Length: 233
Image 1 (cartoon, helix red, strand yellow):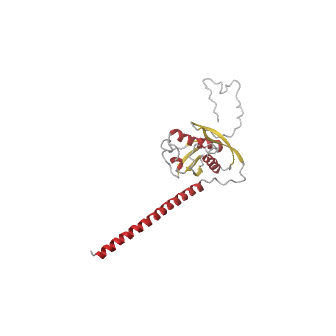
Image 2 (cartoon, one colour):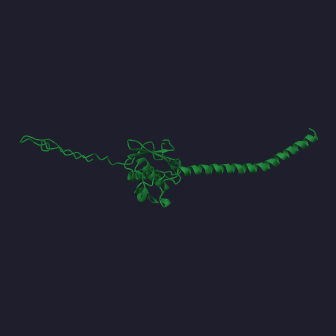
Image 3 (cartoon, helix red, strand yellow):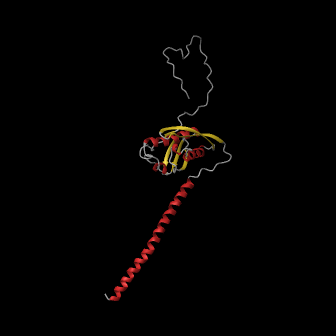
């Protein structure tokens, strides 16, 4: 290799090093900017999903009962009465109360659900089963442990029970999928009972007393007949 080629090679290497020194910081800034924009886009999308359901001015204002933690150190629930405009449609009404539950109480320490969790959808099946589809944050941001997971689900179930009589049970999905547990402990493969009260049956008129021959025993007095317990509706 001639001296001229050596000089050209060294010159080319120097130029490459200088160009890299100038370009790499620019590239690094662009990568950081792109990551920041992506993060902002994801956050914006999450915020749009978390927007409360549009309120119909015609909806009556109702004193809704929401269940948050009773104490920051206690794993029990306490009702809080909040006046809300609620729809008469049970599915929409369920969304409204659950979104309010997700928004949390004034005291953030009494929250039962993660602040970044979002209710993506709520469906009510004809048999009274509510399908509540939450974002992944419900599972990933909740403190892992049977107590905190049970408290979260109980707050959802009791809030629905107090405000939407049509919901008999609730099935929780995470991002449209059934998962085995909430955050590693509480089983989510089944549905949780919401309303244990039996449906009220229409009252029937009392049957007229049957005619009987003189001396005939009534069923209550017939020998060997045991009284049946009263069936409460």
